[in-house]
Length: 109
Image 1 (tube, rainbow, N blue to C red):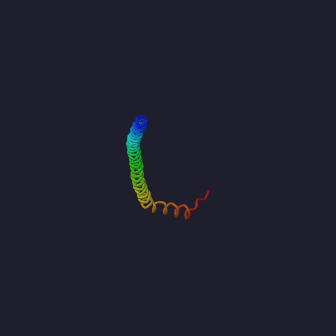
Image 2: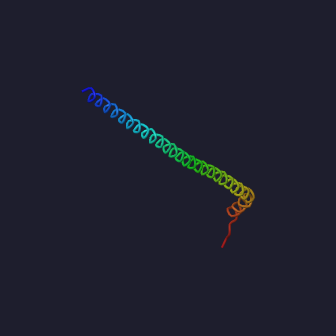
Image 3: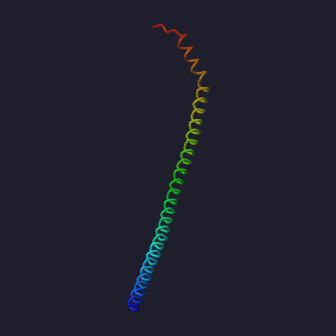
């Protein structure tokens, strides 16, 4: 009976050792997959961050372009307003003289 008992204990120890190896392999497999998942997530995050940074740079560039356009339009408007004002000042007296002449001159038919 001791041989049978010893053989049973030996079989149980071998089964425990095999189970321990299976558990260790499962842990190693899980750890490897977690590392791979973490690596893929990091790559995805980096790609997303790069894309968002490019989008932000484009938006900022558009804002700068619009700011330059606004400055150009304001300068152009100022130039045109100055030209109109200069034209008004140049022709103001002629217009006044023509109005006064038209009002004060009577034509008899």
